[in-house]
Length: 212
Image 1 (tube, rainbow, N blue to C red):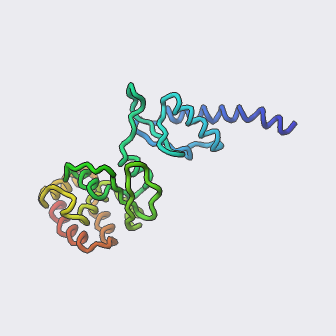
Image 2: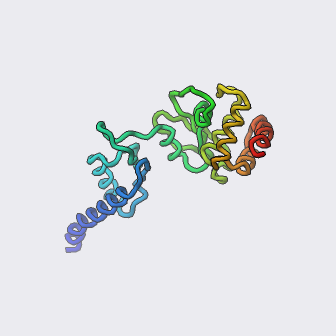
Image 3: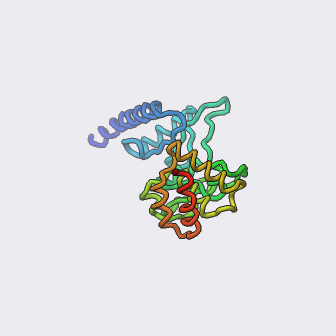
C-alpha cells in the first residue's frame, strides 16, 4: 500500500514541479540563462520540465543543466553568442582576453574564431567556440566586471592585440569610466596581483589620464 501511495503521488509531484518551472521561466526576461539547479524539486522532474520547454520552443539547451531563453525567430530561438555563454559559465571576475578583450573595448576589428576568456581560478570545461585562460583569484574576490578584465588583459598584451594608438585606448577607457563600467580602485587592486610588471606599469601610466 505504501509503495502504491507513492506511485500515485509521484505524477502529482512531477506536475507540480513542471508548473513551477514553466511559471518561473515565463517570468524570466529574454536573453537570460537558466540552470536546472535554479528550481526546487527532484532533478529528474526539473530536467523533464525543462526538456518539455525545449520541445515547445521556449528554451534552447546549451549543455547539460544550462538553458537559454533567447529571442524567437522563424527558425527557432536565436542562440547566445559564445562570449556570453563563456562568461556565464566562468562566473564572477571573468572577462574577455586576447583579441576578444580588444574587441570588447573597441580597439580592434578582428573577430577571432575562438573567443578567449580569462577565468580566475580553475576554469570549467569550455563551451564550443570558447577557450578559457587561467588568471589570478583576486579578480573573483574583487568581482571585476567584464570590461575591467578586458582592460587589464589589453594592458598585459599591449600592443599586440590592438589596432589603435595609446591615446585612442585611453579615450575608450575614459568613456567606460564615465558610463560606470570601470572602477579604477578595483582595477588597481587586481592588477597589483598580476604576474605582469608591464601591465602594472601601463595601468599606473594610464590611470591619471582617465580619472582627471
